[in-house]
Length: 382
Figure: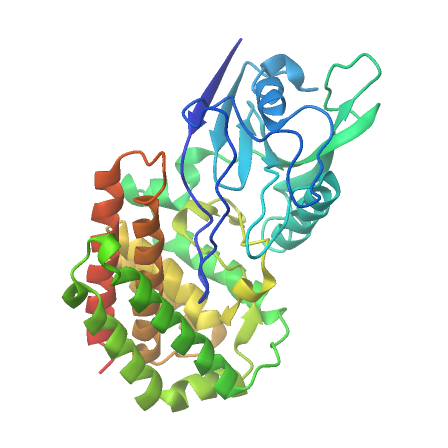
């Protein structure tokens, strides 16, 4: 029986105007994947019992699980450790604090686990199974069982087949038209049940104005190494569209199209099953899930285009028009895609400033890819 530990620097990407900035993790040795947060954290966030390193080590062993497991793949992100067994995935939240969420106490992590279950069951009810306690019985040996003192909580999920995720299917060129139609149909049903968010047209446009300014400031900062002429024209064109096309944005608000959506609708979060399962919504900040239905679909379409499938981007809105009876104006779709591409460029650029960044060439290339898409789509706004 084997266990493997794999590290990534993936941060929860954003499909809303803000960008999450996590506090740096306090590590003894940042290059060692089995070392992590100490048990006692500043600011009143006391986390008694085994520290994160001990929990990761325990959860990386196949014999730690109540089910038969031949191996465990451990994947680290900014906010979590995810442990993949043969049939399930277990997510352990890190004791971190950001501007959106404070997970330094076990009680806060428990609340966040069950909020993640509630939100993701909207689009993947058969995937998100339960919140599971990690306990410390009297013998001092951790267990995934209800007996003993609860020291942490994990989200237990059904493991999905990697080859049926949309990003994999795009790369292997196995996506069928029916696959996309099924995904869009599931989203249409979801959005139909989402109540409109009470927001004024001015408030809605101001969200984008603030986001555009933040994107421009951060991407054009000299420390980022990007020439200002590569960043500022797209942001300026987005501002122009926001002003001249204000009636398009206002109409979306008046028609009740601003909802609490998924918030991070990317191909890697879409499983092409029957029915499709859409996972990993942005669970830690409600404000970042509040967006136009068309904006969320535009983000998915943008990411399909970036992966080399622009025809799927067109298919998404064609299917949405047929299934919902609503045709979204193309200038609005292109604005949303340009804006989201700029946000994603900013997130990619941030990877380059992380202390233990891996493969900086990858993030440099991705930043430029997103900026290219931002330029291309804002040019189509008209």
